[in-house]
Image (tube, rainbow, N blue to C red; front, side, top):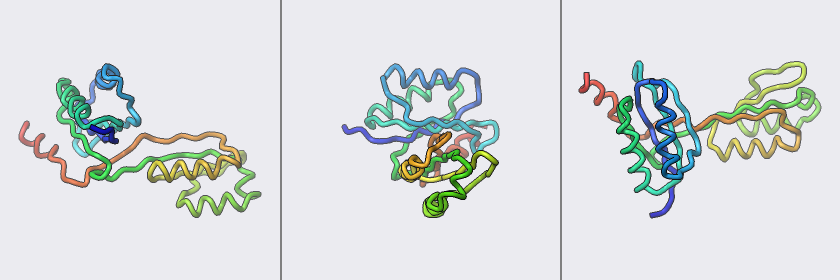
Length: 173
């Protein structure tokens, strides 16, 4: 079996220590987490973990099974990239003078479909949402001008197919 990128979605109660136990499942198997995002889900009082890994389908099935054994976990799913719609977000902090002195910066912002979210005396901040490759491309274009700070979020995603988590929760109620 070949390694692929998988997005694991975990629906759970929001309890202290769960993130530590979930990350331990990956640690025991020596599988690196490429991206991790935890947020509220579409269901009240239920959190959703989005975990991205590169491994075989056999390993991801095993991991999902282990995650579902955690008491607080309601349900876990995994998908390949073709089955999801996903994005990352990034912020770039750049020296303010470059915005006005370097016309090329304005062109880069426009061509990359980014936006300026704030301008201050000493800096301005660019926001970019998109695929990882788009963010990396923007990074490479801005790098020669000097990036004061850079941060990228973990993957956020939704599945293309309907996920039956809401139905499952209604049945449990």
